[in-house]
Structure formats: structure tokens, C-alpha cells
Amino acid sequence: MPPWTATRIAEHMPRFLCDARLILVSNRAPYIHRWHRSAPSAPGGGAPLPTPRGDADGWGVRRFLSQISRPFQNGNAIRWSRPTGGLTSALDPVMQACHGTWVAWGSGNADRDTVDAQNHVRVPPDNPQYTLRRVWLSEAQVRGFYYGFANSALWPLCHLHLEHVVFNPRHWHYYQEVNAHFARVVAEECGNTPALVWIQDYHLALCPAYLRRCLPALAVMHFWHIPWPPWEVYRTCPWRRELVEALLGNDLLGFHLEQYGHNFLQCTERVLGASVDYDTGVVEYQGRKTWVRAFPISIDAAWWTRLASGRHVTRRIARLRAQPNHAFPLLGLGVDRLDYTKGIVSRLVAIERFLEKYPEYQGRFGFVQIAVPSRTQIRGYRQVKAQVEALIERINKRFGMAGTTPIHYRYEHLEPAELAVYYRMADVAMVTSLYDGMNLVAKEFVAAQVERRGVLICSEFAGAAEELHSALLINPYDVEGMAEALKRTLEMPAAEKTRRMARLQTHIAEHNIYKWLADIFAELARLQKEPRVRPVLRQLGARHIEPGAEVYWEVLESQKAGMGRPSAPVNTITHGHH
Ligand code: GDG
Image (cartoon, rainbow, N blue to C red; front, side, top):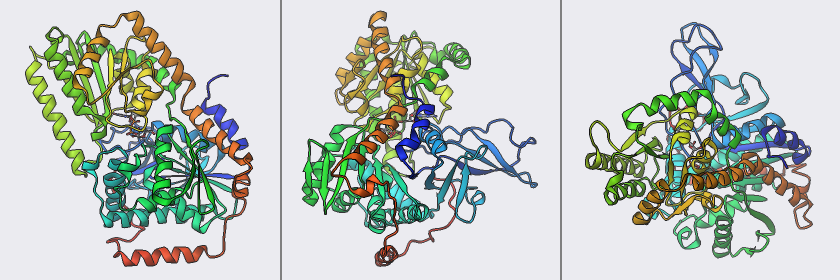
């Protein structure tokens, strides 16, 4: 069978969805509008804006393909942009094909100025195909919900970093409030027409329950982009009951790996006493069933290969190679959001050990570390940044020679084309995550290795390791082992490198992001035929509105009142925070 493509998946969507409307829900939006001073003279044209050095998070990849939406006489203009990469660019064609609704946080400073009275904006702005419903969050909500519970509690908890976990009741309060707010908006969007709601990620864990309680007849599924921790770790969470209970509001719940799903099932059993069938991945609780499945996410491999093969990239490689920092006969590469889960410190320590143990590589091996600024409001992120930078300074002092240093550090957000340059020219890419749901960088590197000269070193603790068998798998806690893997890589015969890379490329060409989507929707279709499934799912939410839904929102309001009011109202414009 030919590989899945955006076009093919788009053609299949109507069959997958029957007559239901797809309502996608995520924290991040697929399109952002921003104010810019001094509009270029030609509306719709103009040079692309410099890439903002914003804060990248979760599955977001921030390339801002900026286009003018509306120029104003005072010289200001609203530009729209698309945070590209993994998920937003994969789901955008799907949404365009099925003309659904995408509900997401409106974080751009001109987002308010571009919506209608229902907070809708039709997107893509230059060729409207579907509706983006923007959700407004106050500064206090962003702090408590996003930086607080989502990224200071759930993120470290799910990545087994208990030393970074902050369980703060106020954060939890905002997390509930924002999730309820999202759920209310989604319920509004569902109206009384058949809909399938698809929630993304750990920011919105409570949404399924909130939706389920007021719209029991709704088909809801969720994809969790990060690991699910084992019970021994999960049990530390004061709200362990509420979180799993809420996620059981889903009909289908997806994780990258079987293991994460298994951990989740075990948690429902331990914390709720739910009845779990580990063989079929079905959990039953309070008379409802949730199907838990593994769908390993991927990338648009063909897109990365095309990008890396382009003339622009070829020319840029030649230019970079002429610079002293890139002129090493052997070049290593690390690309990460600057996050403590990515094991950047361990990687650098291993490189230091390698150069110390094998001095013949000093001056012959260089390493480029691209670190994308991320969640800098959180102390743990500032700490790891300081550690990374101190270590780079130490290594460069120790092993630097005449006019060049072994580590070249770029703390910035790059255009995908520039990433492709590095992916293609690196002799080795190091993915050394201490724990990672999947890791798309590993797959992008493979797709961009046009000459098949490079080798992938991949952490056993990244989800990607389960599929990428021809990579060199390492334990990021074993410095000596990593230093040895680096040596082995650099000395590997060219034929073996090509063989390994070819195998990896064959795998990701087939197992691409569109197959991920197709697998999820095929599973949903299969579930609809299951005799044990709720008839509701079979009809894909033919009727939603239940008497008493309004009462439920009132209960939530009164719960909030007991926790103290947020310092700003729900519907205020926010600036920044990306
Ligand atoms: C979460 C999970 C899971 C990096 N630097 C730049 C840039 N990137 C892009 C890469 C890649 C993405 O960021 C990073 O994706 P990862 O998967 O490696 O990591 P997370 O951000 O932690 O993502 C992860 C993922 O969700 C999907 O489910 O795989 O396990 O933690 O796509 O290309 N992109 C651009 N400039 C950069 O400088 N444009």
C-alpha cells in the first residue's frame, strides 16, 4: 500500500466521520494573529518577519510564516502566522478537508481583533476552510493553568521528575477553571448536531469529564502526547483520583506506547478500583467503557526529505561548512526545546568524556547544540539553561583550540529550513532524553539524511527507540556508554551507516504522521462496530443536549467561588506567553 499522505487522509475523513463534525481541542492554536508596527507597503506581500524568539512548548514547533491580514492607516498591520511542525501542520489539512471546528487558546495580541461575535475566525485566513474558535485566558489563568499545573505539576510528574513537581492548590484551581471553560466552549460549538470531539494533550485532562457530564451522548477521544507514569510515581499527585476519573470521560484514549497505556490502566485500577481488561485495553468505570490504545506519532517524512534536498539547503550547507565552528571533519548535533527532560546535560558530559578519553578527536569532532527557549517563567527551566551553558563554557575552555571551540551553541528558534540544514549535514545526531513520549527530532533527522551518511544515537527512554531499531540505542544515565557509542558511530564503516539509515528511512516513510491519523480514525471506526460500545459512539453523537447541563455549569461556578476568585476576568486579552 502506498504511504499515507495529506491528500489521502483528507479523502478518507468523510468516511471516518460519517455525518459528524470534527471538533478538535488543543491549548495551542493553528493560526495566530499579531499586531505589527509599520506595515510593508504591499498588503499580502512583504518580507517575512523575523522569527520571534518565543517560548516553544509541548508539541509546538514555532515557525512563523507571517502574512498580512489587514493593514491600517496608522502604519500598523495585523499579520497572521502558523506555528508549524508536528501536530498543527498535520492536523490542519485534516481540518481543511472536513471543515470542522478547532477550539484553542487565542494567545496572539491581535487574536481578539480578528474574531467575530462568536469568537470565530475562518482559517486559513487566505483560503478559509474551517472555523477556529478562540478561547480567552487571563494572565492569572495562564500562570496558574499553563505554567502552573500543566507544566509545573503534570509535565514533571509524567516525566518522572519528582524533584521539579509543584503541587499547588491554586494552580489546580486554575487548571479546573480553564478546563471547564474549554469544555463549555466545546459544548457550545457542538450545539445539537452530531460531533466527534478530539482533545489534545495534558493541558486538557479534565475536559472529557466536564463534557461528558453535561453532554453524555457525545463521542470524545483524547491523545496524550507525553508518557503516563507508573503508579508508584503517579500516586504522589494529590489529585490523582480526579485526573484519571476525568480521562475516563473519553471513549478512546491514545498514548504513544503500549507501556504508557498500561501505566494508565494500572492507575485507574489502583486509584479508582476500575475494572481493567489488560488484553483488550478496555477500562470500565461507573458503567462506562474507555478504550486505551497506542498510536506512535510521527512526522511528515516526505516533507522533511523534500526540504532537506532543496537547493537552498545544499547551498547553505556549503556556506556553513566554510565557517570555523562548522568546519570539523566530524560534526555532531543536538536539537531540543531547552527542557530538563531532554538530557542535554548528560549529553554534554558524555561529549566531554569522549574528548578526554579519545584525545585524537580533539579538533576533529565538533558539536552543534540548538536549544529552543522554552517555559522560561519556570525556575527548573532557567536552572537547566544555566547548567547547559556553564558546561558548554567548561568544555570549550578545556578543548578549544586556535580560533575554534568544539561546542557551537544556538539558543534560539530556527526556521525549519535551517534545522534541515543541520539534520542533513550532521554525522551524528544525539537524542539523549531522560524520558520522552516520542521525540520527533529523531525522526526528522532520519527523514532529512539525504546522503545517508549520518548515524542516530537515541535514548532508550525516548518513545522513538521502540521503532527506530537501527539507531544506536544508549542509556542517558551511562556517561561512559554514551562516550563509547559516540566513538563507535564516528568509526562506523560507511556501508553500515548507509544500511542503518536506509532501514530507518523505510520505516518512517511508511509510519508517517498521516498513518498515525489514519490508525486513530480506523480504530474509532472499528470501535463503532464493537458490540460492547455505547450506541452513542456508533451514532457519533447524534444528539447531545441533555436536560440539566446548565445546572452542571452552575455547580462548577460555585466550586470555583470556594477557591477564591481569579484576579482577572476570563475574557481578557493576553499578550505574550508562547
Ligand atoms: C512533545 C513530547 C512528542 C526544535 N527546535 C526547533 C524546532 N524544533 C522542533 C522539532 C520537533 C519539535 O520541535 C520537538 O518535538 P519533540 O517530539 O522532540 O519534543 P516536544 O516538544 O517535547 O514534544 C514528545 C511530541 O510532543 C509529539 O507528540 O514526540 O515526546 O514531549 O518537531 O523540529 N522547530 C523549529 N525551530 C527550532 O529551532 N522550527
